Amino acid sequence: MTISFTVSSTAPGRVRADVLAVPVFADRELGAGGDVVTAGFEGRLDRFLERAGFEGKVGQTLLVPLTHTPGVALLVGLGAAADVTVDSLRTAAATVAQRASGLARVSTTLADAAPESLDRAAVGQAIVEGVVLGSYAFDDYRRAKKATKITAVTVVVADGAAVVKRGVARGEAVANAVVWARNMVNMPARELSPEAFARAATQLLRGRGVRVEVFDVPAMRRQRLGGILGVGQGSKQPPRLVKMTYNPAGARGSIALVGKGVVFDSGGLSLKTGSGMETMKTDMGGAAAVIAAMSALAALDVKTKVVAYTPMVENMPSGEAIRPGDVLTFRNGKTAEVLNTDAEGRLILADGLSLAAEGKPDAIIDLATLTGACMVALGDKIAGLMSNDDALRDRVEAAAQRSGESVWRLPLPKEYRKLIDSEIADIKNIGSGGYGGALTAGLFLEEFVNGVPWVHLDIAGPGRAAADDGVVRKGGTGFGVRTLLELVSDPLPRRRR
Picture 1 (cartoon, one colour):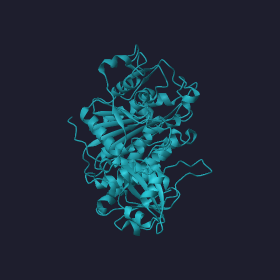
Picture 2 (cartoon, rainbow, N blue to C red):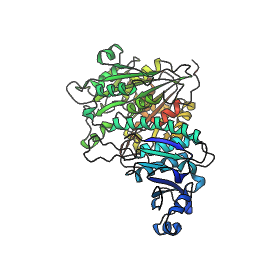
Picture 3 (spheres, one colour):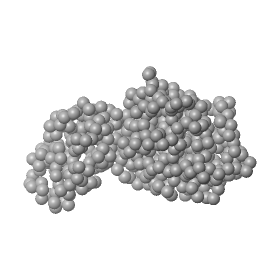
Picture 4 (cartoon, one colour):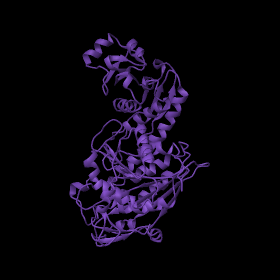
């Protein structure tokens, strides 16, 4: 369901709504709109809060009946006023959406809980993202729907409405992109073949200022994309490569995006266990994030040229599948010995990165649900960040922090490079020794960027959530969309060539 957002400077008690969400700080200090609650509550509000155990701590909520319109208020704890951040407001807005999900019209004064040091546009964006992402539900296959009944949200501000409104518009574009990515990741694999995924991308990007090219098997043969063709040959569903180009007038700088699009990963002949396959429909989360980000570029008036590549395959065992010991030749001419067919993501990314590097962009970013080893290191909420360029690494890290997505730097140790040496090919697709798997995967990918500044984001952990948590809902998360859009909104410096 689409939620409409408006920004209003009308007094909180005069806004038409079914519930008014009011921020409360530590020690029960009511924020903007608190006077409406105090005046409308029949009795002593302080005693009511005390008996309910509500103190204004982060994450606490309490519904309060009112004797006048809107009839009920939702108190939302934010903790100490000085500690409020854009990210905590995003989470609070998600909490509002969840507690008020059975009501149609919501108004909130959360924006006025922000300290003066916070950018008002960023605050407006965060509130919209919190509401939309916090109320997300994938109900396509449910008879009993869980989707929110919220249809309209009014963000009430005392002043600065124009600035907040700009942030709200940006938040809608970003959040809707994340929702599309989540829907793709949550879709059953039988409904999302490489061909269907490419078709969905084409449909999404139609009319959004992005030129889309879809490469089928004959076209990929002509392009010498041996990694994509090799991984895809074991499935009855033929692989695809989608190239997307956004080139605004007066573009300042260029960036290439590459997203892993394994629509289902059985492991191939190096077959996964039954439990290991249960969530493998989500192995295309990197591609979903890249495509979703491309859909919002024009709406956000991005001035950076962005070219994206999403190889799409199904990794299946069959008489046609690649075998351990086979050698693949990639777009850039390098060869790799495939010792484990379940390390397939790097094989298709190799072609995507090679194509991206040929375009000589100022930077390349790839996103991939790549290694379980990264999850061992960082858990399921933090993406691993590897890079061959310190300045680009810092920019991506800062963009992730601003967007509310968590990343952590991991090294690309040159002394580990020998671990992917092959006896018969240029390299092999798994490292020797069994340790440092996330790092050797990164070193493998580095072989295909041709010295272009590059960041690899291993999103194996945060690409899927095992439980609801703030703006994150169980299942596909759309991780990476917000970081990418934050990054490309600030043009990169041109690279010296």
